[in-house]
Image 1 (cartoon, rainbow, N blue to C red):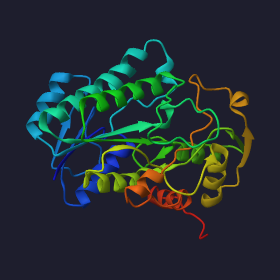
Image 2 (tube, rainbow, N blue to C red):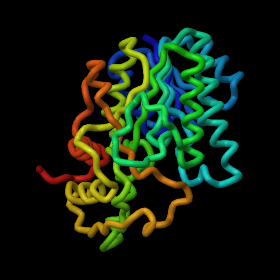
Image 3 (spheres, helix red, strand yellow):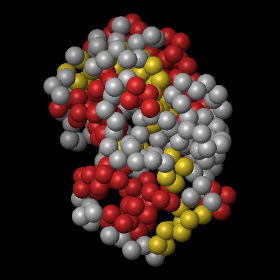
Image 4 (cartoon, one colour):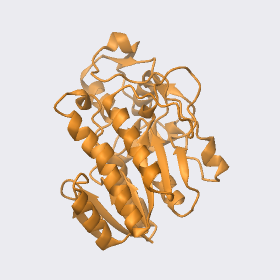
Length: 303
């Protein structure tokens, strides 16, 4: 099987290439910049997904069986800035349309990585993969929802996989930020009224590789197991495992007050559809965190 992965300069795309290569698939990677270190795909293309002609030409020449589309604008606060909004929609909406159109032209399966931000985050009921009561709160969420709609309109052989709270070795993330803050501060303030579940890109890459080996198409939610927590809970566990004594102070989103983009309070994603489709669930998020800390060279406790 030949698999084309976009966005390998990011956390998930990077780990997808590693997982697919490990499984022996002919993996072709693409990204907006030079290929990051540590990867060995069969081929690499510098690709701007907003360039429809380039997308059609490259994917037409590669002729993959599957496209895993990880490329996205993910800077949520920067997306709210007026000058950035056209770029955000160009990447997340039109760029995804271009990839889906190319997938259709070569009859490839497509995996589109979406987000909990397509929902408004109200209430406490976990969001179901097939919920359609979208009401994204910010530009990022709106642009990713447009990407979902493009994939759904153009293709039948697709997996739309919503994820959240992502951390991986190749890029910035909450875990790395909290670790860095803990080096220089006695206390850190972390919001405790936004609830969701962390997602380790190594584990997610394995799940996506399992998915593309099937024809169980549709919408899915994918995070690590271990229940729903707040960012405050996550930060405390990061410090507990890494042995950092910095105190974590819980605050409300309103008290924190630094974000330009509105964030959903309820990011509980129901993953039962994965079990119904007989996909192996991802491990507990605490176990995932421990493995990630080891991957980046942080010594952890034995518990």
